[in-house]
Image 1: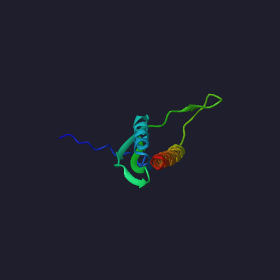
Image 2: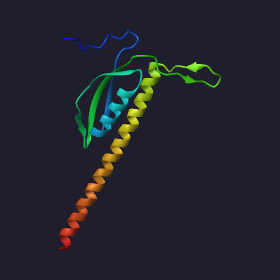
Image 3: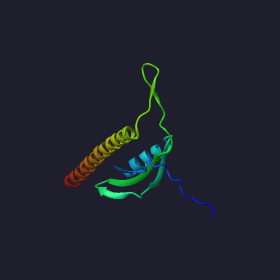
Image 4: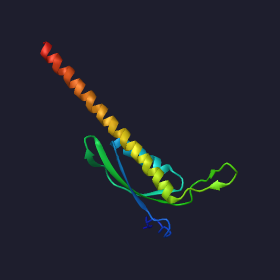
Amino acid sequence: MPSTRHPTPPPSVSPVELRVRATVEGCALLSARLRAMPGLEVLSESAPRPDSDRLVRVYLRARLTSPPPTQAAGDGDSEVPTPAALAGALGDAATEITAAAERLAAALAAVTAAEQLHHNRGEVDR
């Protein structure tokens, strides 16, 4: 039976663990986007774990498999972001997604409360 193990990364490319806190759909979307990123390999993904209200946590282990694409600087030179800078940007994006998921959960709770209030008023009017 062929081995399904991933090759051991060089010492300078250690895997990192990412925690995603969002709705189930938000976690799935971020996971799909990370898996589609060139130069990034998602090694493992946990099942969604309840976090709070309608949010869940998902843990991903990932590593860089190749240098990230370069971005041209103003004078024609290219600059390659460091792994720490990429991890920071990824963390910032995850934080933004988490905040958006929390706003969505709050909005859904408000809609549910409004629907319940409307339903209760309907029962009183009868």
